[in-house]
View 1 (spheres, rainbow, N blue to C red):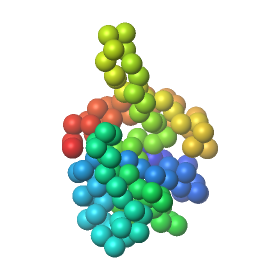
View 2: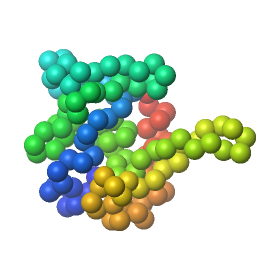
View 3: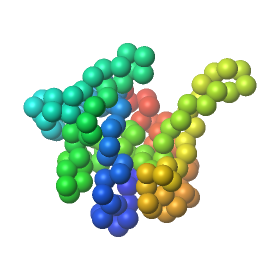
Length: 128
């Protein structure tokens, strides 16, 4: 979802502590290497089914993300949209997409892209 014009001067609010699927973790490993990953203290959380980092994002640098856009974790590609689990009337949980006004100073510029980001989210969830 990133916009080069809007994101180039951002202080990486989107790159704080990603949660990664196993496939996303392996892609990050391929780009940054094991030594870099280990400095960020990764741990696998079975209940969430995700890899988490204790101290930030291993792919974030002072000039932005070191990973090509199409290989970044889904939560990074859809930012400033975030997926939040919402309970439906039948007690099933469905992820709903919301704009993260608190974490992205340019969030309004992304507001008209719901259909595009929903498709990206649905396709990304099928990858791993």
